[in-house]
Image (cartoon, rainbow, N blue to C red):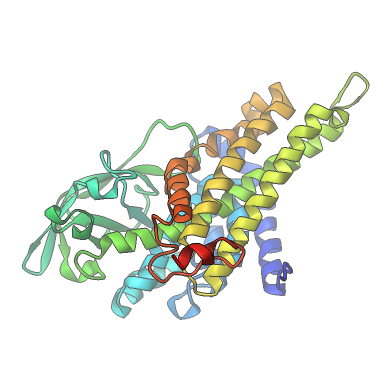
Length: 403
């Protein structure tokens, strides 16, 4: 078992860490308070190849592995969650779905400019009445000759109002439930295709979250990704990719809270000694250490499976559940360590707390992931699909799979 990073992985970690330290963190609090999406930082991420980090070079990407993607997400979210969210939707949910399911012509048209960072992309799945229950979506796509006519709406879509391309899911056969869902790429500017920002939300103020609206949008049949009725499969595949980046980013939140809390606990004195000498403060620091290292191990387990080309729905789900809950707990503890300073916006600790709440909901709530893990363990759900493998670390897996 080798935990060493390659020279390439170390170089990426150093490069993205410097980018965050020099460009993201100095303006993070100001951008957050002002609800400002800093496009110059997105341009910087594109220059580093982060908007195509795991996309093969032949399609305009950096061609790096999933350990690199995890490292990049951790470092970016250590600085600002809004930009890790961009990696999640642009790379994980959208681009990797296109890489797997799009035709060569579609890849050249949409994937290549996305991987190069020339175009931004989002993922239109969630609706007002369809979150965890994807099959309840009401957006429809009616075939009329060489076009599909889309009607409906999506909400809580990251980068909805700034994305150039949207991978949108709609029902082409409403009676078929999840088997009647299809996937389409819509481009900004199509008649009837509009968007609006969410004006009030708890966190990720420096990012973009909004709604998509479709009013008789005529989408060319050539914009159908995969086959009719394959949309649910594509969406679930995309979620596997997006959840991985969410879990990796959560490690960055935990690490930021740990590093800031350790530094503060060494400097802040009460009753004649640093507060780090007090056992209650040490207890909080220890919880952050445990949360970080267990989350990182789960993320790297999923990364290894991805690099091996093995399906990892179960392992990615476990990492996403544990890491996001650990991040929120670490942010809560960091505020406690910092006391009233942790509650003040100008110190930036409460920003991590607010930003860490959304990932517990999106891309599968904690309750959905708990259900998935229990059903895997009980044998009610196939381990990573029919014939799927399970991490060799899970010694209980082979016995259950042989039932």
